[in-house]
Length: 240
Image (cartoon, rainbow, N blue to C red; front, side, top):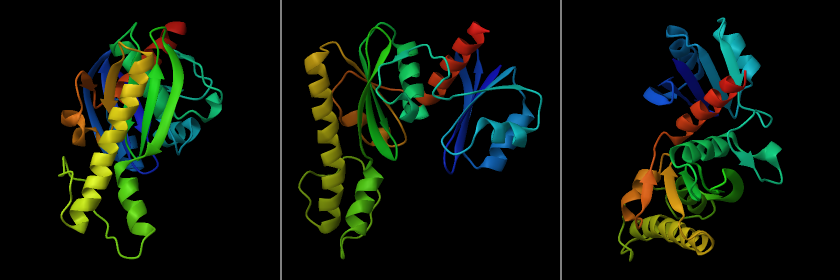
């Protein structure tokens, strides 16, 4: 059994794998909970990816004799990076790309990860990460309207609001949600102009708001980042 850890600024998630198969996962763990969960069932290999903590901090807190492999800009990958600033490339973006390439090999792919920001990343059929776009996520858009105006309230996203809002709340919901949908559809269309057989892979916490509204074929893979981290782990183990 292998464990992969995706540790964010506030919360972490853990995936348990047997080979390439995701057996179970848990999310929204604070750091002490993360450590307790890993200690409860120590794996053969442990892969750690974090935006806020180093591998050394994690291993010291874990205090167990298990091999920890960390995701850094220099970690060997099963895909290649055609990116001008690889040192600044987010671990979640490269993990999602590796997961998509594993699930759909030999295909041109765009991975749309809908989290705090929305990222659109192209991985071509030759397993090359070409880069992509980063735009504000839906909650960031709501927060921006609330923060930078005097009277607009703060709302949470709602699924499939009417296009024409009849109140301030409805107008803001339509602007954010339908505007984001139009953005996604437009970017997919522009990608497909260059890659006609492009497959779209959707992930991230806000993907559920848009999955049913997008034209097929759209493949939603909620735990794509965990799958990608495990793919990177097994690739590194094969090199040992």
